[in-house]
Image (cartoon, rainbow, N blue to C red):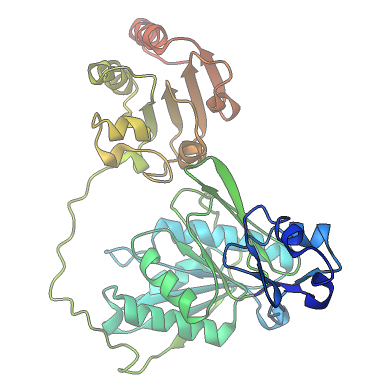
Length: 399
């Protein structure tokens, strides 16, 4: 840990009270033996700048890692209840291919489950150079302990520089556990990923309620873990000539043990959420009353679309939480989204930036939503939406 050293022999030749007064946080104390620094120190280093001959900043030695020993961009694939690859795994595989190409390294994939060779073949079809398969009846249902142990075994085997995990309920359970076992960092819900020539991962995500975009690096630890939500990255194309290989790994009964016993599984009823909608009409703070959502529903119905909303609409209780778009809600990538009275916060924008066509309606010409919209309409939604509905009714078409 970095610290400030006081050269007492030089301090005692000066006015100790005056020296202590240099700290705006009252972290320098006087005593019979000279000066001391208490827990109030913010490490602002103002004292070292004013009196460099008395106060010396001593930086701790940061542990260095041999990055050449950590090679490859890995994806921890996830399976659905139907034993099929989760879409986020293939989206991450596409991003892994992009990152790996920049540093000229392999694309690795980890997959665990039961009877999953078909899923492994699909990972190869979408560009994995090597797929490590943990196929066991004990891994049929997700349990955090054995899945984490399997991922740990994979990392010990390959030493990947980067491990990408889906930001799902499953990924959020075992990715932090694996990161803790390797005493490394994990950045959750990344919206942008890039990589430096030395394989340092550039991880970008909204922070402080979406008010800033945090750029996070883990330069002295490996592997670098990052979770990404579904539909943040585009779905990749299959490779023209897949040439990946499959490696089967087996764990001992002790490694596959868990304190959780799965007695039965009841699948949730299938329902089409806003994540699957091709057209979305989203309502924001510009909606004054719950009753006014009727025009939002009317527009969505006219376009065979679905209704969604921003956080403020959901928190008001006007829409179900499953209809919220944003990093604290759902991530969508429709062919068309119409943003009605939405300012365009970073959190919301990150949840719908994959839309093919974005139309924004807002009476504030400086609203942030216009920076990402393909078509912007400056006007009152209470005037624009009825006009759109009338146009659709007259012509039977939109735009």
